[in-house]
Image (cartoon, rainbow, N blue to C red; front, top):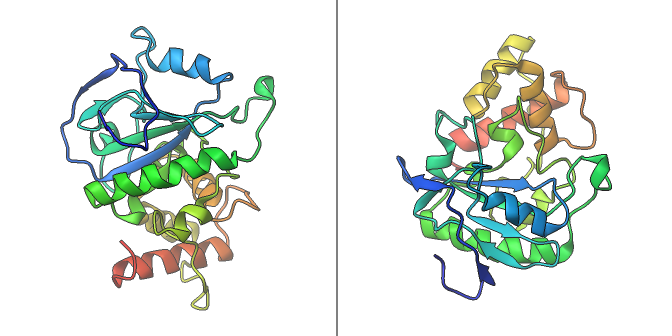
Length: 239
């Protein structure tokens, strides 16, 4: 278990096993359960069969559930940039949050204290395993057919300010080179997404890169964003 000032409590979860891959990713989730004790109980329940490496409360308390050298069960059936066993290749971080469930009060922004706790923890994880910024992703990125978390209000721009994830492209001067939907989908797959259900993949891309307008269909602005992201990565400006 991580023994430093970034972790406030350790509550071991039995829901873990051995990794089959080295750590190359970090995946951000929300719990969609309130209060936080409910999420903690589920993430440590052997019958539930789910877990994460960390759970961060809205008040900023960081609880470690699984040691980083073990495989936590947070991503489920998922895929990113050719990796099908995302659980083996990633560190999973759950954020205490009501999610999109109206029964929990509905979707809302993330607490400042929670993000203040996430940033240094994620920075240490990224540094320890030399995780590329393109591999710091949301659950919806790796499982677009099933998941929408952490959702359109998650502050990716704040993580990007610290170099912890890819920033939104500053310029889109090159425009959209994809002449049809098929070309866009192939580029989306090349960037990392599972495009088995095209509309869901587009929604996940929008949720991450254009959360202010989500339609689930490729358009010129999305094409320009995707093209610039791929160009920056291929030319070595990002990784």
